Length: 258
Image (cartoon, rainbow, N blue to C red; front, side, top):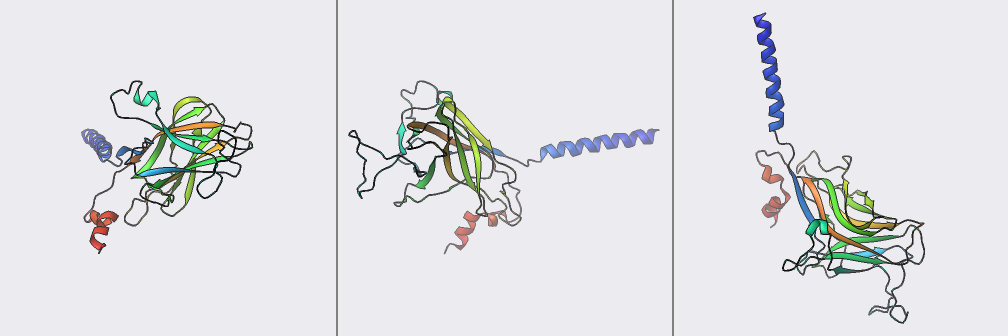
């Protein structure tokens, strides 16, 4: 009887050690990173550019004449600017005496209703050609969110990310058929590959662009959408091993750069 009780106690102790040691092993380290403030600062690393589907309207001057660029090409919507406005839920009401806060605004217009779209993508500020640039996302991202101002139009927003194999994945960030500011977020599906067997094991995603879609039954004659603070929640935990620095691409570049 005593021997049986002793075995039971040993099993309980072993089970407790196993459970608590499992909790003690940090397999994830979640961190939050702001990929883009949409503040339009002079030293901002990115310039945000737009593209639109075929029925985008021409931009016209006060006399109703099409506006042309220096090359004689007719300018089309959308147009963009930074505005002195922000989500109160994020920054509060009174910003007097504090850092300037702005948001990125898009004004769009199409000639006909339908599945029209507007793309918003970054380019490097130092690139004179304005080529699209994909923003690296650190770690293994699990969630992406952004503040978006909507005017209760039946539109929705998609986010495009690229995995290390070059495959672009489209995720629905959310509908913007609501009034005012709202935080939209999307979880990154586990079937999007962010690790690999060989070193370096992290195979991080890159952010490609946003796309605003209009619904066929919704008006498109004149609309505004505003963006603020693109943020990700990502797992930055990595197992350490002897020689793990040789799996860091940045460190390897310093060794082999010359």
